Length: 326
Image (tube, rainbow, N blue to C red):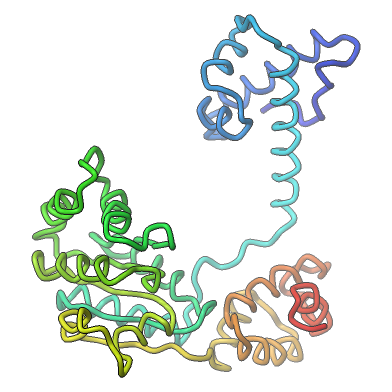
């Protein structure tokens, strides 16, 4: 393990020794299996060219070694500070069994079992993505693809799906990418989950519908109210007709319940009765379960006893710091 002290500035008196110290610390980190850190990781995180870093570590870099050492010293200090901060922050439960998560899991299970299309939609912060990740951890041949505005059009969406499937080196033509996707998923009995599907345009959604039709795999579209209104609104685009007619299950998520608040309190080991009651109020607000989790994490830092010692006062203060109240 590398020396935990801050690196001496490479341009300070005795700079050669400081450069050697930085070089040794970085080399020790890379060599330590417990760190799971590659030279490529260091290059990317420290913003040092890969070839330059390699030669610097071998004491064979002909350029300004002090400049490279300064960058690496800053990276070392940042890494230590981040590790110390993370050690003080509690880890949120990866998954909480709530009424909402059970509805999402049921939709995913149905779509994969029946080879059907399902739509799960509702406000942000209700735990849709976490429930989906939980399902993917427990079942085989499940591909979770998170879309962004940048992937909203046909080719971008197909390439995003292909990358998730591990497909590389395909010509950047929609038909060729889609053919490769079909070949990869056909016969798997798998499930393709499209998160943030409201970002997709008509052509991209139709391509996903075509993947389902051609291969028989299950498909779940997850998004906000905008997604479903596009599919079902009174002025629905005629282009959605084929997709809409194939939807076998629709799950609308609205607000988290008091039972969901209690489940989160249990997962965090919150014992104070007043704090648990306050959590019920918090999950009823926009952002719901995500907001409650952030609030609990921040409150537990203020509590000397961690999450178990959280009081209503801790929650109120955390909620104010998160902007939940003026």
